[in-house]
Length: 206
Ligand SMILES: Cc1cc2nc3c(=O)[nH]c(=O)nc-3n(C[C@H](O)[C@H](O)[C@H](O)COP(=O)(O)O)c2cc1C
Image (cartoon, rainbow, N blue to C red; front, side, top):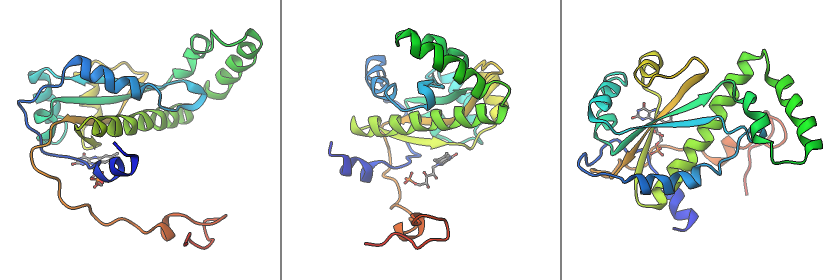
């Protein structure tokens, strides 16, 4: 699909055909794209927990303010971010030349160690970018998605057995849409969202 068409077509879809399945092979193809997402120092902080089990989806829906799409989608992902992803640096850089490893790995450790706020920011940033890739990859294959933050993170963490170093960044429903989404809502104009040079600078116009 043309990129411009993909951008127009991607919508947050809330209504799904519950009887439609997406095979593991189809999911795997989507994640071959997702894994190419950018992350700081290439630490790839993301893990996607794919919930397909009907009973678990029902419980997940309860933890997500009862939002029906959590249960009716083909798959509901919980996009997780790893707080201590910096500890994976040695493994991630093991194929780079030794002189680079010896410089970069200690640098990454020093940068993140003991800085909980930064670890959390990075987990959220990277997982969110990977989630965006999933939304576009899915739409390109004709599926619909919906990102969601309306859930109780503690309840979700418990249901999915998340460990303390892994946070649920957002949910992402995936499936075949039932009803067409409503017309796209108001978007702030480019002039307002791009400021030249400083925040109080003029807005971008053509
Ligand atoms: C981080 C994030 C969290 C969201 N949480 C929810 C949610 O819990 N429930 C929901 O129905 N939509 C949720 N949305 C969807 C937004 O309402 C939607 O993206 C926005 O209205 C723009 O519509 P569009 O994505 O169709 O362009 C969320 C979107 C984002 C990016």
